[in-house]
Image 1 (cartoon, rainbow, N blue to C red):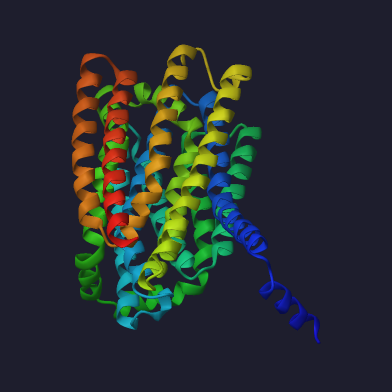
Image 2 (spheres, rainbow, N blue to C red; image 1 turned 120 degrees about the horizontal axis):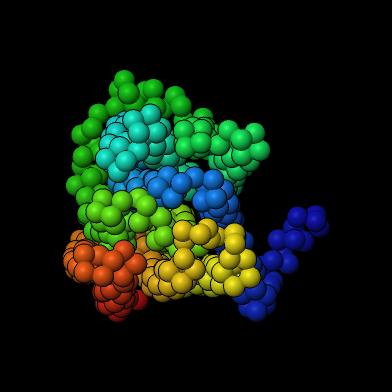
Length: 434
């Protein structure tokens, strides 16, 4: 008997306990592989933010922090537009008809151009000079292209390539910022340029093999197939993202536009410590959504529900580790985070509020992804409408009557409403389909 046959026979003859252990290890490896990239990006953003904090005026630090919020919204928007048709159309994305494939790629190019223009305009209105705002816009456009490529690669069941892309982005960004800092050439313009170059590097790792598709899509792609996919799958997801953005980031827009980037800087410093959680919660759905969709299409509801539980466990572990790290930094190394114009008490209060907010998001995101995989976009949009109304109203009132830090409590109220409503929707869906 060959060694291969022996190995196969041994696996088949595993005891139930051994099979359970093997499944646990497999799931853990999947999440480690998928979370490693976002965590590396998060650590890099955290490190360069500390450099920016100590080398840029408070207003410029606020601008770069606001850029991360706005560009993250464009990435979520991109995911809502393209991830549902990519993951639902087939067990593999290249199974879809060629006309739909070209339509997706052409639509993504147009979306990325619109995203770049919109972000450049918003950043210019917030006080960035024209060259700096233009670079911010290019960064948002490049990252939108990269996010589409991430969704595509996850649907192809190739998370290793996504990890390499995240590492390429992170290593180049950190390395260039270190070089600029040591050469005393670190300015707002040079930092923005490095962000653009790092985004391009991450994109090339993912999508060089699909370069020909983009050229064919520009020549032969038609928007009609995507419009049909939009109508059936993406429209409610996009509405949900817009409403979710109002729920989770209304403070960023209101504080920056009303009180300026200088005021937003303190809130951004607090959210910086929670960034590993937010990045993981943004990235893991792109891996979990296709898995859940395939399970539901195959009638294996139990497998989809197990994925929800695994997702929640991973999100909870990331949240605990992030909170512990933030507490340690504020307790023993406050000088790394604070300058004289960032009062310790204000930053500590902001960090506590952000910790509660991220706990709420980590709890509800797995159920939200399950409902997306099941096509429940309309009900999710309804929940988003209520939570965004609460968040926007409370944030504006608290900002105008008390101040920017209190405005963050409006976000917390909206998040709690969203979490409660999504739990109710998920419980009803499970009762009907379990």
